[in-house]
Image (cartoon, rainbow, N blue to C red; front, side, top):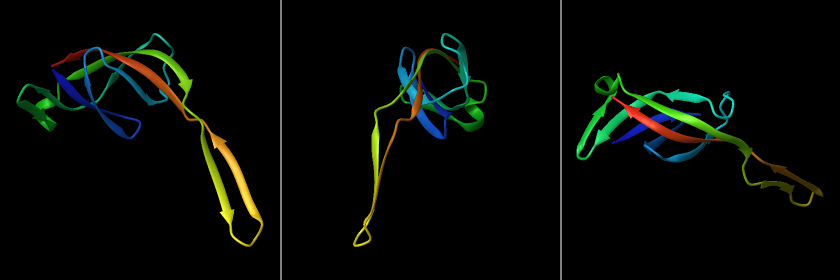
Length: 101
């Protein structure tokens, strides 16, 4: 059984036991969180929208951390303008425990 969930402005296809990195959630490590379900499927059948309304996905927060560093470099030619900045985005690692419904 799999489900499509929405969190952090993105959609993820998950199964029980999956480990995901999602946008940072306001939940302590070890806490249980639930996500809104957009679709639930098993085999060739798929329930979407109103048909999947009662479904829930329960997950547990494993850890919070920062991702890999990306370099942001700005430059304007012939103007002696150069700026270099780095950025590391926060993420939450979750493990999907159950898909109900």
